[in-house]
Length: 314
Image (cartoon, rainbow, N blue to C red):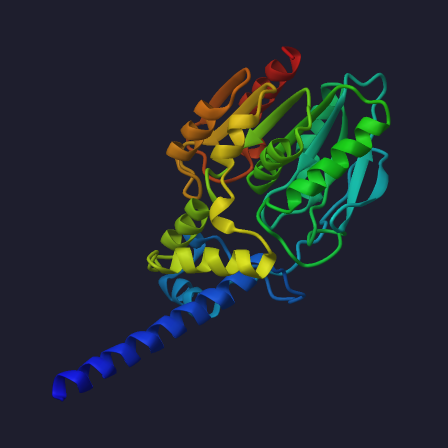
């Protein structure tokens, strides 16, 4: 009888623990994939947090205010409102006698004004540019982000819009989540850009969630898997199937793949796997002493040289 009594207590305790872990994961998944209207500052990167701040994140989650456009292009630009899965806002900047058009897609927690410096460099090289707010960001509709999954449809919307203007030389640039959205769009919709520039795309959604837990010193098992499961359920997709390393197998256009050797969000192993799986002409550039950050600001001469050479060869 005593053994049976202890067994019941153990089962009840495990059930309570299971419910608590799933509740925490559900809560964190929602905060991770939905921006809020809080006026409080966005939670800093884990490297800038104290141990106490990291502990608070584990309990209360991150503060994730909706990203707002912080500035505007110095050049004359046209604001576009495009209907996709959500209404998205873009800035179109034209130059005289363009060689083509570069579409720019921001990363997680970003918005199109963060693409202005990169846009300026492509304009100097003789290209029109389109800077895009993904859904939930800037002046685009909603407060949701799916870390590149549903954003892939918005990549296609912008690509199709520019293609319908008669533009034949369409290039795409994406950083982090933006790079992932480009890769998924090519895999899903078979669009054919003339070339793409990918900065630090993650290899799989699970690996990026796992890395996020490690950076705040939180237990990765089973929480990383639970967060990914609930995040997918909340947002209508299977998170474990969101794998850019697999999308790479269907990318045949020329690719410039860029990576910072000190990136704590994306591993070199993930980048190497993506690079191996790419089917067309490709070039991998590794930036020293660089993390998951703006490569142009950290490595300006090298970044400009790499992009100039890549675009001149295709």
